[in-house]
Amino acid sequence: MKQKLPLSKTSIVVTRPSQQNKNICSQLAALGANPIAFPCIEISPLTDFDKTALNNLIPHCELIIFISTNAVHYGLQTLSNLTTQIPASCQFAAVGASTAQALYTHGIDEVVTPLSNFDSEELLKLPQLQNVKQKSVLIIKGEAGRGLLHEILESRGANTYSIDVYQRTLPKSVNLDALNAKIDLLLFTSSEAVNNFLVLTPESLHNSLLDCQTLVGHPRIADKVTSLGFKKLPIIAATPSDADMLGAINQWVHST
Image (cartoon, rainbow, N blue to C red; front, side, top):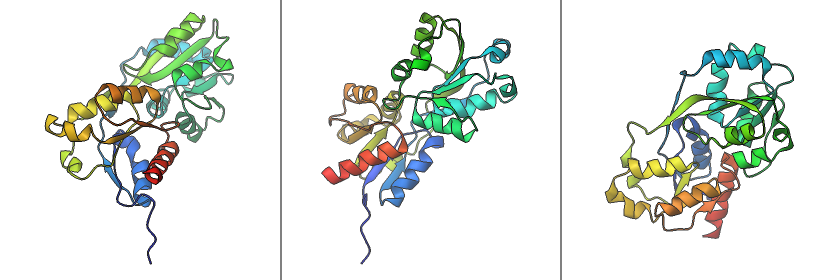
């Protein structure tokens, strides 16, 4: 007799950008789920930044902070001609474990990152980001991202420079037919994706979609879900990583 898979017949909408949804969708499918890829953010590179300022900063940089895996991907492309100028003593930091892992795969072995609550606030608590007076710090991020790191590090006396290496935009087209199936769970890993989901879907579907169970990767996203009218209490995973999101899904399935 064929063994029933743990997520058999569970339909889960994954709203991550297309570049980031393939791995979790394949893992969900392997567990028997019906993953529905519905990207709510489109990622594209940016090159419009002050290259002269960056060239002047890199040889003296003491700390480089990557905000996301996209910041690693597009940032290291941007810095490809400058990496040899980064001082050996320069320290690397990442907001979360997935971002740190992306740096490891690019050969950067030592990365400072929070152990939990992967966000700017938690990163700023680490000892390595306390005594930064007169240090040269580069923050690599996406356009219109939070400015908290830059603001706090400047207030601590750091000489801080931020560059936007990618932009997040509303997808030009989506497959609305994919949402005609039974939906058991909506997966969100950013507040922007929650906003965009309701923009991308017709109002005629909102009543049924707002009844769906949601899974989020941070309490801040849970607040956004609630404020936009989703009726069920969001499930909050420990982090937005694939492993923690899958763990939260398994726990939810076995508790219902």
